[in-house]
Image (cartoon, rainbow, N blue to C red; front, top):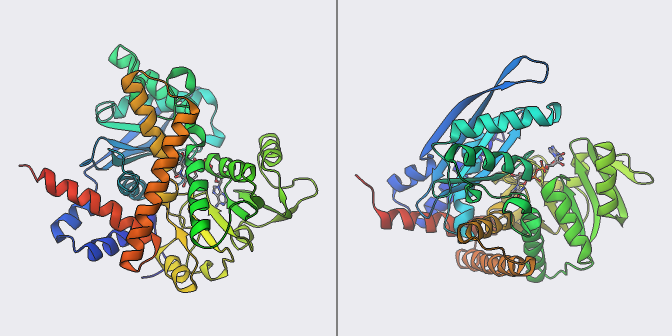
Amino acid sequence: MSEAQTPLTVALEQLKTAAEKLELDPGLHCMLANPKRSLIVSIAVKMDNGCTRVFKGCRVQHWDARGPFKGGIRYHPNVTLDEVMALAMWMTWKCAVIDIPYGGAKGGVCCNPKEMSKGELERLTRRYTTLLFDLIGPYRDVPAPDVYTDAQTMAWIMDTYSQIKGYSVPECVTGKPLSIGGSEGREEATSLGVVICAREAAKRWGLKLKGASLAIQGYGSVGWNAAKIAHDLGSKIVAVSDTAGGIYSEKGLNPYDVYKHKSKTGSVVNYRGIRNITNEEVLETKCDILIPAALENQITKKNADKIQARIVVEGANGPTTPEADKIFHEKGIPLIPDILANSGGVATSYFEWVQNLTREHWTLKDVNQKLENKMVKAFNDVHRMAKEEKSDMRTGALMLGVGRVAEAIKTLGLWP
Ligand code: NAD
């Protein structure tokens, strides 16, 4: 296979590997290779300067055999339908791996939030919600934040949905602010899950998280929170990056100070007294644990050989291509795959949904304990599967996730 991979070619290749190993019926394989439903929308938005612009958006619902669709919404200038299809498919496997009763979905809007005002983003979000209205809802499809969307975006979705319904429906969306039914711990949940996986992987492969050196690509929600949590547990953050580049310190960076610097200047680079490095150099930093937490297709055939980390833990969705996976496997570098490593976010989204449906509010301690239990169980399930199959953790996780979804589809039957 050529290295001209897209997220969808990667997702389909991964599915093929799992389907072959599980000896799936070809018809079932074909069903899982295609999303159940995709909706493309044109979102007309009144801009601050008075003109009207039309943004392309979509929502892809992959499979819901194990429960309602669930998945984030991404605002990014390079969003494509193919990318969203891949992300929706990964959500289906992820919800099955972490064993929560959801199927997979994803949404995307092709826009550049960095160049839009808060008012423009609000109008875009509300109009997009009305266009999705018939397809989403607490028992149909529950959106959440993803790249360049946040708790405020979710609040606008909840309000728009509730206004149309005529009553408050907090359970229609997760990742909300606490004041309107968000869960304790949701903001950090993905990163806490990533760090729990890093800790479990370190244990299995003869390292300790405390004192381990970490390099992190991407300093947004997942990257920064992972840096903070790992730092608080005694790890040393040696390199971080964002779209503008990276920084490196052998002695270790203080992630809180780096965050303040990024909030003030817009980037982690040019931090006083700290060496700037390129994004490629961040990935290739000599360290114990590498956490890609930016976007897809970052570790490919071209740079996998140069990675010097002892363990890779995927915070982002789809950062590693199958060819790079193979290189890691041959080199004996364990990789904890996205559908396991970053599943803490959707697990706590599920906790938020349950709290909303039952009108309860759990403590942070309760939420994090439930997350810890889920993550450790999923990690052990995947590790056992990989060991039985003599495969890498990615194949183990895919076999577990795809296998559980296939089983549910077979049990439900095909109607009519
Ligand atoms: P975010 O928008 O908060 O942050 C993304 C970060 O990546 C930003 O700092 C940006 O500057 C940086 N970035 C973008 N392109 C880059 C590049 N080429 N090199 C280096 N840095 C780059 O997004 P997020 O919510 O942190 O999501 C990051 C990844 O994690 C995505 O793949 C997302 O799908 C995945 N994810 C997020 C969640 C969640 O709860 N937010 C859950 C599961 C998976």
